[in-house]
Image 1 (spheres, rainbow, N blue to C red):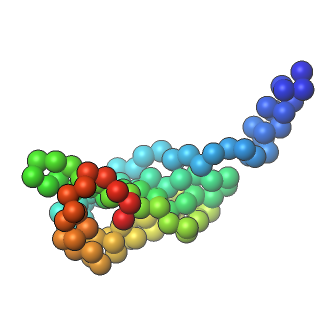
Image 2: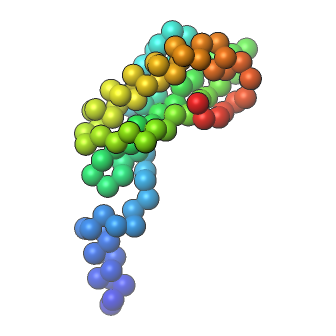
Length: 106
């Protein structure tokens, strides 16, 4: 009986909920890459997160981005994720994918 109440309490209080990806957004093409915004829901906020993909020699290489920035709306988190991903692409240029690793953090 106590476990039922604790389950209900944690459901409504928002405690002990792990960060989870919000719904996936359509990718955005930028230069020769694809940006996939995927902000993480954390409580009532959204953390800037997503991935950058590029096809190299018939293989899709992925660079994940997660930042400390938090936003109160999903729309703001998506907008700033796209902006940050574009900045990462611009600052790193060809070296972003030059190591050939299939997946890593940017």
